[in-house]
Length: 138
Image 1 (cartoon, rainbow, N blue to C red):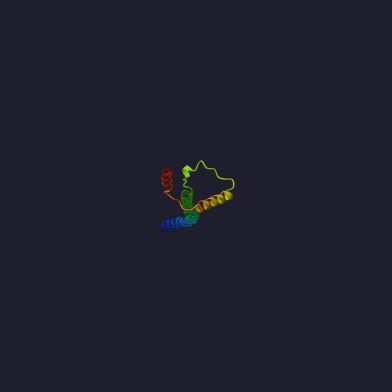
Image 2 (cartoon, helix red, strand yellow; image 1 turned 60 degrees about the vertical axis):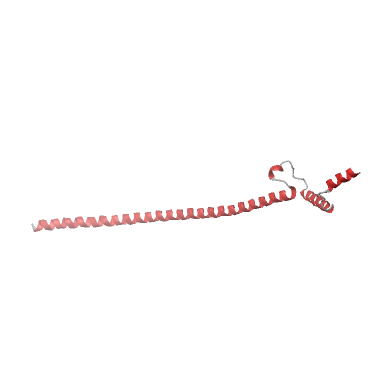
């Protein structure tokens, strides 16, 4: 009986040793698996960080383009206002006009004509009525 118990205990000891050896290899497998998963997570985190950086860069570029668009809209409105003030033209009704070949020369000619018109003096609004009265008196 003692011998049987001794053999049973020896078998159990062998089983336990086998389990310990197997658990050591299982631990190594789990460590390797954890390392692989940590590597995958690190790669995913780097990918997310890269995507975030790209998104931030795109948002910054959009903001710059919005500012540029606003500036161009403002400049366009200024040009339209100047066209109206100087020539009483709107973009819709200036289609029939062609761009002159010599822009600088044309601008100079316009300036000269404006100076000549100013040189004529002030406008007498009552001139037509005075002319009609003078004509009747004759």
